[in-house]
Image 1 (cartoon, rainbow, N blue to C red):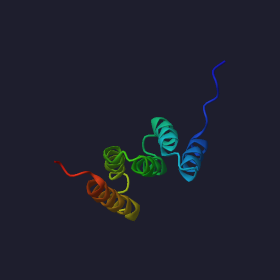
Image 2 (cartoon, rainbow, N blue to C red; image 1 turned 120 degrees about the vertical axis):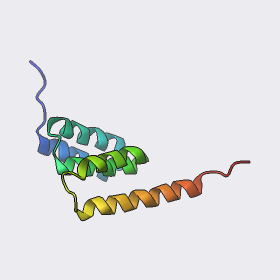
Image 3 (tube, rainbow, N blue to C red; image 1 turned 90 degrees about the vertical axis):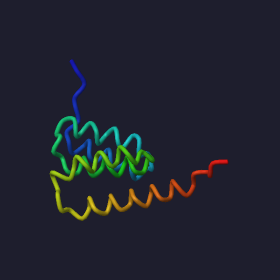
Length: 100
């Protein structure tokens, strides 16, 4: 008998818990699992974007936000995450060593 599949609520809670534990890669995996089952899950896309951002995968975070925009075209959470990504990119650029 196959193992039971957790419901979406459990997957989302697991993702949030991993974020709280500062384990963004595991959080992203949990959110991806939820989105695989329900691709229009707003909380899943928000969680995935935040997880990827915290993991330093800024392009993947942007892609998650791009997927979210049609679901929430004028939501302030999307704009806030985009702004945080912009700041993260600036910070990453300032930490990059200058070429010789």
